Length: 455
Image 1 (cartoon, rainbow, N blue to C red):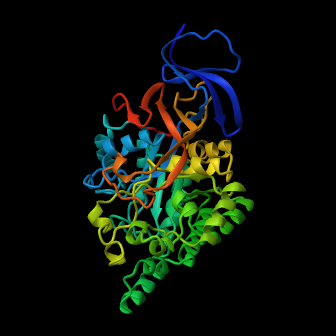
Image 2 (cartoon, one colour):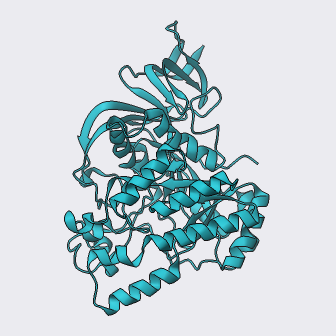
Image 3 (cartoon, one colour):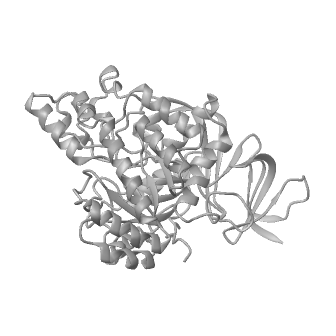
């Protein structure tokens, strides 16, 4: 017998634990996992992972690859290259593109742009917006991984549905068996506070943080939880940034709401005051904003007690001009929100594993199993098991480096993590048995596939 790939001598890590072994991949799937040192079959390719940890192919459940319509910021070529080089094997792409992914036709237009250009596998979210409730079932049949509701302003200015529309829409989503995620911010609170701050002449970086207080996020999370309970629908709270939201999520889970939570490295590792203290200004502008250390610590507690289920990056590339990188302290309102994260998220979080803040199996649960379970991809994705896709992220926990914006594969080279020292880095990304990244360099051709949840 000859297989496509053998990864031998590594420490295999899943959410359940770790052990020494060899992974055999054939026809794109995990054929076997051997834990004894026995004679191995022949293979088209062999990776000796001695000294390394072999993780399931990691998933970034929150990326904006900006295609179609905004390709000057990012496209499937550059975004998926960044993902592969960052140790990510699967991405889930957000729907606020041009046109928004609100119809089957718009979904097909997006898939046409991705086809033959992606170096990693990908799922696509549909958007629930004002007036497109009739598209929920057709989008499900066409293969969306789930739905997104923007409860606050977003890139593309997608009009949010009314509260009544959300409840009715989520009743329909419940029938599909899929999950809806929310960008949870109260637009009314934000617009009121921004108008007050602008009237006082505030344009400094911290005005952005003050215009989007924790209560704006907490109120929207509370509303979303009530609506999901009423509709009997499955829910995800995206990019959580506030301590009160973690408390709400924890209580909702205890009372039986089918809800999951996602946060991002920026909310765990940075502080809003870094806009001034480190001179980052608009480079740190993102929605919801990076808050105080107290909020970050609450998010860490939510990770450790499994209230929060997933880590994404909210990869949101913009041009340097849009981010005002030459004058980040000048006018916070004029700057775009977000930055590229799909290539930096894994080393940032592995550094936290090395620092003892969480275990490697727990990180796998957050960055592989959790997203796969949330969005209907488990057990095809998110684990290393017989029959699962042959996706692997092989990491060297001793490898050190420095995040350098100039080396990012994204079109956008603006990141507040520039200069961060990291320890623990991906050294291989394997997609269905084929190496797509080795030692930070892209390998092979774009063979990423569109992922549909099982019917």
